[in-house]
Length: 230
Ligand code: 6GU
Image (cartoon, rainbow, N blue to C red; front, side, top):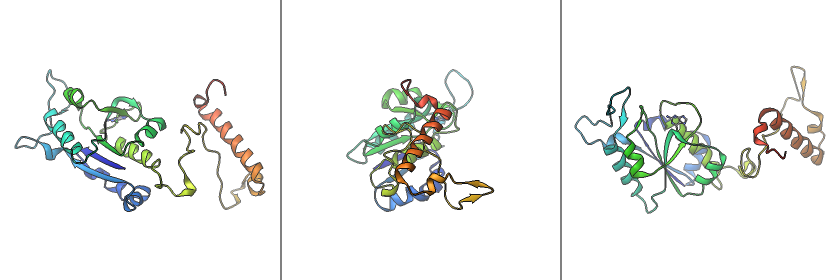
């Protein structure tokens, strides 16, 4: 699976690209992440990528004559133009179902904005899939792009080891419950004990306890995840 990230700040991704799961997935050839600096598509001698809004007001607006040619050129670099995602608080709200949908694509092009927004003609011409990661405002789409990449690569076959399949992650179509409580050594810490059932070795009983714990936690923390029939 290939991601192309279009941004004014490609260096923001350095740390994330070099870390754990993603780094390994790239090394193993399962995932590619290509970064493109929007500034390389600037058309004037000042290399400007944004300008003041017509009609006045605060902030700066990303220029269509910079962003549109950049997106078009990048999409034509391979035979698959890919799914174009524009990161904006105005988009549909990202969740595990949307991650599953994105994971079905071989290529995803992520367009990150900064400043106050995008010239509206960028939307009109490119008709991107607009995605938000929640009802709050970030300084730019870069951290949202990392959230999306991080969520989607878990769903790419072989990226996780077999012992940590994402198929039954919470929020997935196969599991609407939160994960149960987990414990590891030591068996006693500051007077707190591990539930005895987990130490007893009865796998059926352990499975029952975990299912019950998942259900109770979900009811207490996220009753909205359980339909009215639960
Ligand atoms: Cl995708 N971008 C920005 N700038 N703010 C956001 C967001 C995206 N999602 C939530 N807030």
